[in-house]
Image (cartoon, rainbow, N blue to C red; front, side):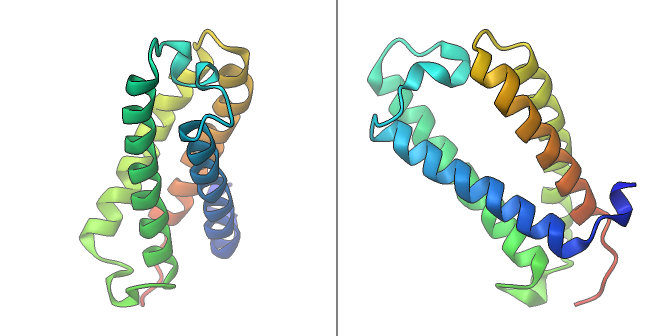
Length: 135
C-alpha cells in the first residue's frame, strides 16, 4: 500500500512535517513553547533543554537535506547514492522506534500528536527508501 503512494506526495509530506518540527524546536529553544511538553517532560533545566533542542535542530536539518537530495532538489547526482539509501532506511527504523517511545510517553501531547507524526514519518521514509527511480 505504501509503495503505491505518490513519491512527490511522500517528499512533500516529509518536507512539511520536518519544516514544521524545525520551527517547533526553534520556538521551544526561544521558550515561546514550554519545554516540559517535549522529551517526555524530563528536562529539569533550561541548559539541558537547550542542548537537546540544538541537537534536534541539527538532526532535523540532516533529515531535510536527505529528503531534498532524494527528491533531486539539491545535489541530485547523489539522489540514489548508498549514503542516502542507508540514511532513509535508518530513518524508517529510528522513527518506528521513536513512535513506540512517544506512545509510552508521560505527556498527552507526545502520546497523541507525536506518535502519529513519527508513524507517518516512518511510512513516508519507507516510501522514499523503496524508490527505484534513476537520477
